[in-house]
Length: 299
Image (cartoon, rainbow, N blue to C red):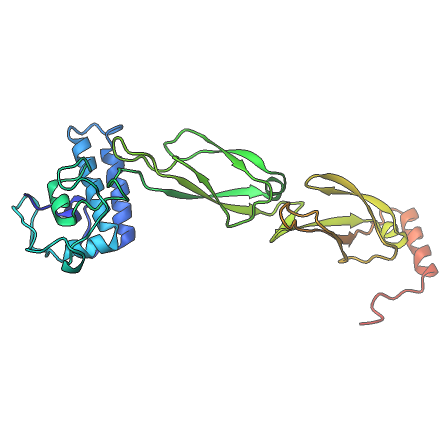
């Protein structure tokens, strides 16, 4: 049988890293994929790439393959060393059922060297690689749940359902939306890692939602009911009399939904009206005379 130089097939050096091997495989797989390639032997080349990647991406298979030596050249006649193929002999025992010659999609070289060691029982099924991507959503999306459309290069738009209560770092699995497999093999999966981004109105810390409420001085001093916007709609909030800027009011269980739900925090911010005319100035002068108040007295 002919020796297969998997490093040459994947166009990488023998000391290539796992990342280099993966990147080279993806580049060449796109080039020779039978559905898009115009090269005459694209399907054979694509299968050859899949076989090489199946070996070199797996540390145990790669170690066993490297033990065959670096002096062999593709196309040379090759026979495994006597006793090769047992777990204790440097070979690789796989789960392929049916033995050499069964329809694994791999060459005789692979079958003889690795004993048909494919992906899980039944051998290598030509499945495409899983893909990972990041996806940003707003606090409102995380609070209420949403349906979003994502667009990836060279792919049709995908509809994604965002569950209510999701937090940053969580992943959404889209089955069968990863890389295309070998002919007859299934696609891999696509995993979207969620990042919840703060908006102008809301900030998120773990599952707690924060917002800032602007108050007039008299609303804070006298204590009044004011309308507060939350991700699920507006509510009426009673402001305690004498409230100061920076005070936080906690609404239990009104943060991100879940078990347990987060809390909703309202931070008060007192906004002082400007004095743009003589009448406004006189009003402030009256307040100055009426209140014996020094805000820096306790500093």
